Length: 230
Image (cartoon, rainbow, N blue to C red; front, side, top):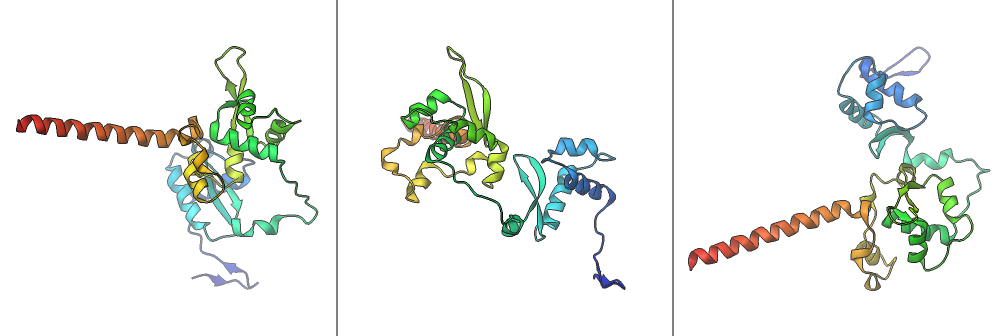
């Protein structure tokens, strides 16, 4: 049990080892989220860093700050239910324009995507600084060039985008069917097969392939069984 010191300050029991305290200190002083390899390179001896991180995450789960992992990088963050306490009164909130929101949605679900492809999907040309605003927020960044004539720059979302919207990975985003069920879009007029590409649907496409292989196996088994009976 915790004990009171003479100055009435609660003395919490120290249940962290030296190496666990090192990991805690490294994360606390870091200016940006750190991956496991980076943390491992800074501590005094080799150990199971992931296990320590999971222990710290559990210890901080009900504290004013939490240890979170986003895109395989770890950092301390203000507890989500206390974040409003950190905002300053003089902060001025600005809403994104409709064009910026549409552009961000297209990049999110179709990345990597070029400027011309975004304009084609939206059906209108870019407004002034629409893409630049998203890049200034560090929600979007260039992702190489597309291997076509002219080699246009492709764009995709960043880890800061995931962090801001409290997402672990892109596939945590709602699918077209889920958006339709929520009444946010008219799913009857959208071909779900082309609603998003690449990164967003990678996991789901893998599941589809596994299902196809399973169906083929069942079909072959059924055919073989019929042949044996004949």
